[in-house]
Length: 83
Image (cartoon, rainbow, N blue to C red; front, side):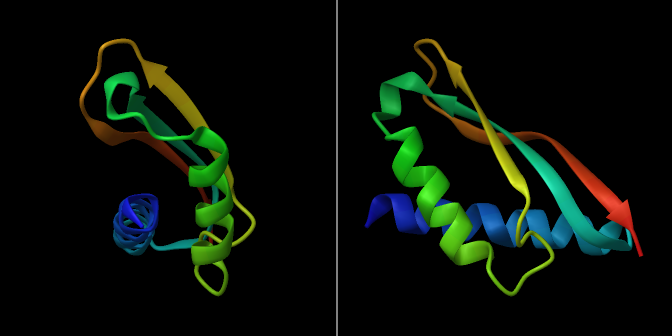
Protein backbone atom coordinates (compact mmCIF):
# COMPACT_ATOMS: atom_id res chain seq x y z
CA UNK A 1 0.00 0.00 0.00
CA UNK A 2 2.86 2.37 0.79
CA UNK A 3 4.36 1.62 -2.64
CA UNK A 4 1.07 2.59 -4.27
CA UNK A 5 0.99 5.97 -2.50
CA UNK A 6 4.60 6.71 -3.36
CA UNK A 7 4.06 5.95 -7.04
CA UNK A 8 0.76 7.84 -7.10
CA UNK A 9 2.60 10.92 -5.81
CA UNK A 10 5.43 10.33 -8.30
CA UNK A 11 2.96 10.26 -11.21
CA UNK A 12 1.41 13.53 -10.01
CA UNK A 13 4.84 15.18 -9.92
CA UNK A 14 5.73 13.83 -13.36
CA UNK A 15 2.44 15.09 -14.84
CA UNK A 16 2.95 18.52 -13.26
CA UNK A 17 6.45 18.79 -14.69
CA UNK A 18 5.28 17.64 -18.13
CA UNK A 19 2.56 20.31 -18.08
CA UNK A 20 5.10 22.99 -17.12
CA UNK A 21 7.26 21.96 -20.08
CA UNK A 22 4.29 21.68 -22.45
CA UNK A 23 5.34 18.10 -23.16
CA UNK A 24 3.41 15.71 -25.36
CA UNK A 25 4.66 12.73 -23.44
CA UNK A 26 7.24 11.62 -20.90
CA UNK A 27 9.98 9.34 -22.23
CA UNK A 28 11.98 8.57 -19.09
CA UNK A 29 11.92 9.32 -15.37
CA UNK A 30 15.06 9.10 -13.24
CA UNK A 31 14.15 8.36 -9.63
CA UNK A 32 16.49 8.40 -6.64
CA UNK A 33 15.33 5.97 -3.98
CA UNK A 34 16.80 5.79 -0.50
CA UNK A 35 17.98 2.29 0.31
CA UNK A 36 17.01 2.63 3.97
CA UNK A 37 13.33 3.00 3.03
CA UNK A 38 13.15 -0.67 2.10
CA UNK A 39 11.13 -0.39 -1.10
CA UNK A 40 11.22 -3.14 -3.71
CA UNK A 41 12.25 -1.67 -7.08
CA UNK A 42 10.24 -4.28 -9.00
CA UNK A 43 7.06 -3.38 -7.12
CA UNK A 44 7.70 0.33 -7.71
CA UNK A 45 8.16 -0.33 -11.44
CA UNK A 46 4.97 -2.43 -11.67
CA UNK A 47 2.93 0.20 -9.83
CA UNK A 48 4.43 2.91 -12.04
CA UNK A 49 3.42 1.02 -15.18
CA UNK A 50 -0.14 0.53 -13.89
CA UNK A 51 -0.67 4.04 -12.51
CA UNK A 52 0.89 5.83 -15.47
CA UNK A 53 -1.62 4.25 -17.88
CA UNK A 54 -3.71 6.96 -19.49
CA UNK A 55 -1.31 9.75 -18.51
CA UNK A 56 1.49 11.56 -20.35
CA UNK A 57 3.84 9.14 -18.59
CA UNK A 58 2.26 6.02 -20.09
CA UNK A 59 4.94 3.82 -21.65
CA UNK A 60 7.81 5.83 -20.19
CA UNK A 61 10.82 4.15 -18.69
CA UNK A 62 11.44 4.41 -14.96
CA UNK A 63 15.11 4.29 -14.01
CA UNK A 64 15.76 3.82 -10.30
CA UNK A 65 19.04 4.80 -8.70
CA UNK A 66 19.57 3.48 -5.18
CA UNK A 67 20.95 5.98 -2.71
CA UNK A 68 23.07 4.16 -0.14
CA UNK A 69 21.89 4.95 3.39
CA UNK A 70 19.42 7.39 1.82
CA UNK A 71 16.06 8.16 3.38
CA UNK A 72 14.49 10.16 0.55
CA UNK A 73 12.66 9.60 -2.70
CA UNK A 74 12.97 12.24 -5.40
CA UNK A 75 12.93 12.75 -9.13
CA UNK A 76 16.39 13.55 -10.43
CA UNK A 77 15.44 14.16 -14.06
CA UNK A 78 12.59 13.76 -16.52
CA UNK A 79 13.04 13.31 -20.27
CA UNK A 80 10.05 14.54 -22.26
CA UNK A 81 8.98 14.75 -25.88
CA UNK A 82 7.50 17.98 -27.19
CA UNK A 83 3.91 18.17 -28.37
